[in-house]
Amino acid sequence: MSTVHHPVPASADPIADFLPLKGTDHVEFYVGNARQAAYFYRAAFGMSLVAYSGPETGQRDRASYVVQQGKIRFVLTTPLRSGNPIAEHIDRHGDAVRAIALWVDDARAAWQATVSRGAVSVMDPEVFSDEHGHAVLASIRTYGDTIHTFVERGSYNGPFLPGFRGTPHDTIARPTGLLHIDHMVGNVGWHEMDEWVKFYSNVMGFSLYQHFDDKDISTEYSALMSKVMSNGNGYVKFPINEPAEGKRKSQIEEYLDFYAGPGVQHIALATKDILHTVNRLHEQGIEFLRVPHTYYTELQRRIGPIDEPIEELEKLGILVDRDDEGYMLQIFTRPVEDRPTLFFEIIQRKGSRSFGKGNFKALFEAIEREQQARGNM
Picture 1 (spheres, rainbow, N blue to C red):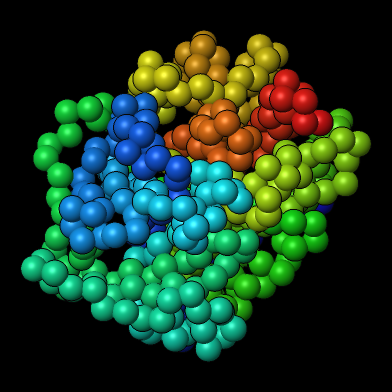
Picture 2 (picture 1 turned 90 degrees about the vertical axis):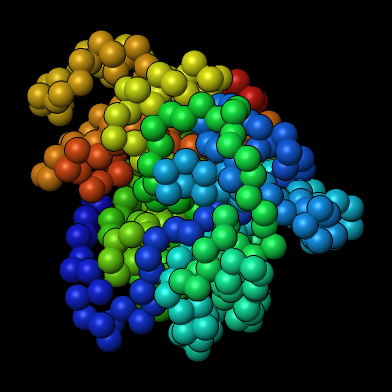
């Protein structure tokens, strides 16, 4: 059976929390056409274009667009020529998350702490400067071709980072009420989950927050295993998934096939009003997974009284789950690209700190229906 852990934050012990994180600084995607991708995130998700870097700013090999809503910041980067590492990443994985950037007070110390514990350095600490000050960045490798970049920006007050210029007020963005990144989920290969759980524990000082096994996350046809890792103060949470044995190909196996290895499966974006946010996203073209009517006929009995009208939740396809601290509401988009890889979760927490265990079966059956339609089961 599953076990649930709510550890004492490691930050309560300054010796234990050797990698203090202030949160997610940004997420960088490598994409085939950053200008068009930025338009999608602005028009559909309601993010605002806030900064740009490219040939006009002295960047010769790439162009990057920074879009933001609340504390969520995405950097969309495209190569300007073939044959470079960005183009190779896109050729292998499609449009995908390359870097999960973590906000720190001291990037050198963060890099040193992790490399000394076994992390592989991708970029040693480097200072970047312009007229707005300076920032320090350093990167380490994690699962697949994904990296973590430590960002120290205490001495920088520009629009994003040195080398980027600010952009005018965005007239395309239609905000949807998204606030911050709640968690980011990584898919790894067969029997690799514990290896990466140990990496986050030993190298980055994270703790096991929750654990779900194939009894929790399974349908008639497929299953997966998941462990949620959390940093000391709880600001950063990374669930790690691996496939489990089932009658047919699981969603994790489908992802690994199309992504060509481990990578970020989905990003959960928080809102304080999920009905408003999902209504807006739906109006702006985002497509969501749907569950059957029977899910809602049993909902009141399963989770007890809630503030939101159940008929409104069913109309939008929003799922609800409760734990001993409250409840949470969540919904998942269909993949946002043609490869069935990256998707998004919209989540509102009303006390609950869990990840929707009670919704797993309904959710994964919905995913399986999509897989079947693609011919990938």
